[in-house]
Structures are given as C-alpha cells and as structure tokens.
Length: 264
Image 1: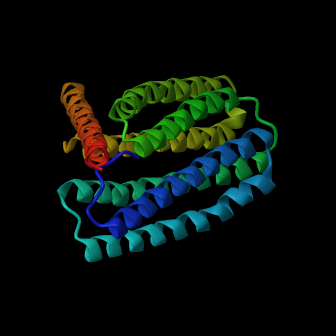
Image 2: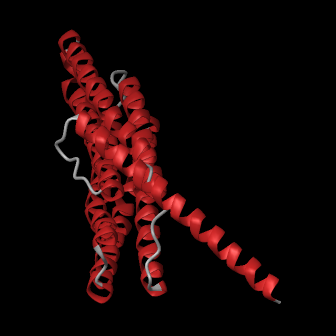
C-alpha cells in the first residue's frame, strides 16, 4: 500500500501491521466463500462444516484488529490523512466479518440441500454469480492493498452487474418452481444461497468505497457516479503529487551526496 510515511517509525510499523491483518482477514473470508460454494456444488458436508468452524477464526481476527486499531489511535494520535486510513480499516473489518457470516449461511444451506437429495436446478446460477462476486471481493482487497481508486471504482460498477444477475437468477428459479412444485423447499434454499452471494457483493462494494474515501478524502457512500469519478480523480492527483515529492526528495538526496563528494 502506498501512503505518506509518518514521522514516527513505530507508527508506520503499527499501521503496516493493521493493514497486513486486514488483508489477511480478507483473504481468509474469501477462502471461506470459495469453500462454501465448493461444499454446495460437490455436496460435501465435511467441507461445509469446516467453513462453519472457520467462522471462529474470522471472528477472532475481527476482535484482534479492533484492539490493534484502538491502541493505534490512542497511542499514536494519527493526523487526518492517516486517521482516514485507520478508520477505513476499522469499518472494513465489519464488512469482512459479515462476508464470513454469509459464507456460513451458504455452508448451512449446502448441508440442508445435501440432506434433501439430488437437485438439478440452480447450480449453474449459483456458480456464475459466485464467480462474479468472488472476483469483486478479490479486486476490492487488491485495490485496498494498492490504494488503487480506479480499481475500487470498477468494483463499485460491477455491483450493478451482480445485482442484475441476482435478479435474473431469482426469476429463473421461480420459473423452475412453477414448472415443478415438488422441489419448492430445495429451490428456496438455493435462493438463500444466491441472496448470500448478493450480500457478499454489497460488502465488497463497501470495501471499495473505503479505498476511494481514504485515498481521496471524499466520502462516496450513497453518491452518484459523477461524484465518485471526481473523487477518483482527486485520489489520482494526490498519488501523482506524492510520487513527484518522492522523486524530488530522491534527486535532492542524490545531489547532496554528489556535493559532499566534490567537497572531498
């Protein structure tokens, strides 16, 4: 993650650790979602139970990060730009924990569906939507790690695609029910899986919004895309300015070193 370095090395170390923990928690939540979908598709009740058990680790990481952030703010009293990043991590942790909760719901539905016997409806819809949502989550976490506002904005736009595909999948499943009412309960469980995936997409979008917030200084929640585009441009301008400053400092240090050599 690219950010201005704080005057205190210990602060930078604490902040880097918070970022590392956040991204690790995000990766674990993403793995939880992937395993839950595999458990559903493969009718693997053992794997589904592993997903449910993994939720304890996700919850533990949430508590650990909350404590780390609290101590970071209390001890270091970060300036405005650093505080935005710290608070973005704090808010994003909630979304990651809820992604884990949604993965547990999918695993629970996987067990129910496996117990109900063979079902030929809905698996293609689940597989397609899960691919879209997992890509959103991956890109949101990558955008966070790289402070990439452009990539975060793309995640936000993709949420509309996910919502449309979710509605299309629900309509298709309703058609299946009307054609064969014997499998109503099974199809409804698939609908709950799709709903969980749609919610995971919403949480990935929230993480993307936080990237734009801390990198631009603008809160883009509930904003139209025109305002988001302005915020992304502000983030890009700030990034370019930081790069110029780093380059200038490097050149100045190089010139200073060359001057010392000449004096000798």
